[in-house]
Length: 130
View 1 (tube, rainbow, N blue to C red):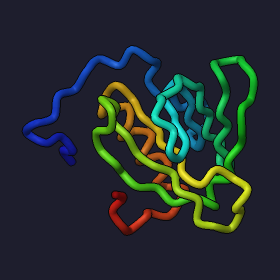
View 2 (view 1 turned 60 degrees about the vertical axis):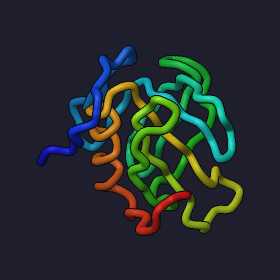
View 3 (view 1 turned 180 degrees about the vertical axis):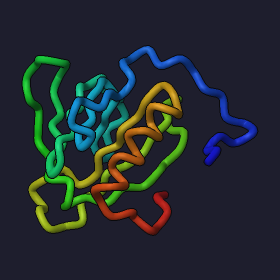
View 4 (view 1 turned 60 degrees about the horizontal axis):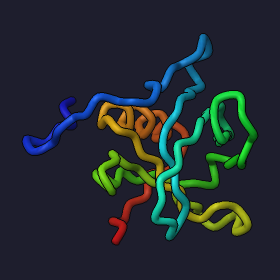
């Protein structure tokens, strides 16, 4: 399947590509993240070990928060502030958790690898974001 549009420009990823560990059910690597209305991307280290997503300041750094992936839906967002982006949206079961989490990568390939990994775990969000 080719996900590239004729107008898409792939950039080299300056962060590590996602790596699957010996156990094919987890994924980890450095990406960008921002919450809700935040306008700033922050480089963070993500470790997806279903049923949870752990987000750290950096690899081996302080754990910032944990998301229970079954409480989230996923939507491919496309280009957002020069990052290839998808969104994890809280389905509302745990209101105290993060409501929207935007995850971005420098390369479309890296972002799509993570997006497809999350698709295998969470429910696709069927409505467009505005």
